[in-house]
Amino acid sequence: QVQLVESGGGLVQPGGSLTLSCAASGSIYSSNVMGWYRQAPGKERELVATITTGGSTNYADSVKGQFAISRDNAKNTVYLRMNSLKPEDTAVYYCRFRGDGRDYWGKGTTITVSS
Image 1 (tube, rainbow, N blue to C red):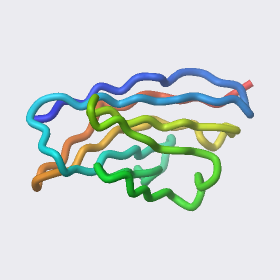
Image 2 (image 1 turned 90 degrees about the vertical axis):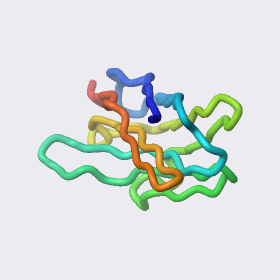
Image 3 (image 1 turned 180 degrees about the vertical axis):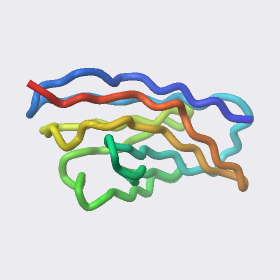
Image 4 (image 1 turned 60 degrees about the vertical axis):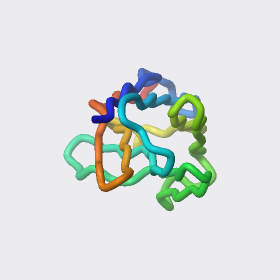
């Protein structure tokens, strides 16, 4: 079992920045993929960014150049730095862990971009 604890959400003004964190604990083996997904009101959940244990990243086209994903393997923690936030970035952001055939989701953290 793997537990995911997300933090860093909140209210931010347009143009502002936030950093999300997701710490994984439990039965974690060396090779895995962690990432962030988001679900805006009335929309389906979508990929934001993922990162492998080796540091390979994948971004949704909509956030390339605006968001940056990173991880600390020693802490089993993944980060999402979000810059130049826009109202359309408002969503619940979910952390995801995949490895060894297992797939876990965090409970989500809400980001609201509004003046």
